Amino acid sequence: DEFNDIRAWQQMLFDCEHLVTQKDFKAIADSASWVHHIDLRMNGRENDLRVERDNIETRFKQERTKFEGDLVDYVNLVNRFKDAGNFKQMDEYLEKILALKENFERAKFEADKFREREVLLGWDASEFEKLNE
Image 1 (tube, one colour):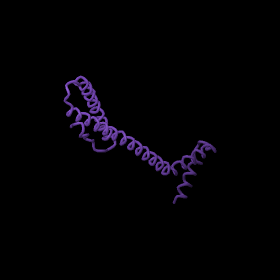
Image 2: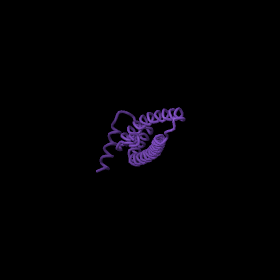
Image 3: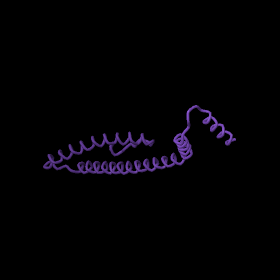
Image 4: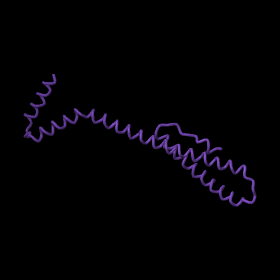
């Protein structure tokens, strides 16, 4: 059956008014070869994409872990201020509190960015409970 199809195709080429040259046959053969190997190319590309996604996820997890560690540090600093009741160092405490407030505002912005990226990766968005403490 395939032989008859190929024979009919070849006969159509011979019956065509356009003169078929060696260059035309090479292009036809190259196209057929490309189609024949497309599965291997697609599988290779899928594997490359899978590895790239794994790398992106790994890097993202590292960034998120560092961010969560920073949040813990911020909360620990806030807890230290709860115990500090010395009025002599009030100006110093005020500067540190303002810096912490700025850190928390930046952390809220970064948390929103992390949530967006998690959604893009198809994950559930993190809550980052330390931001609410």
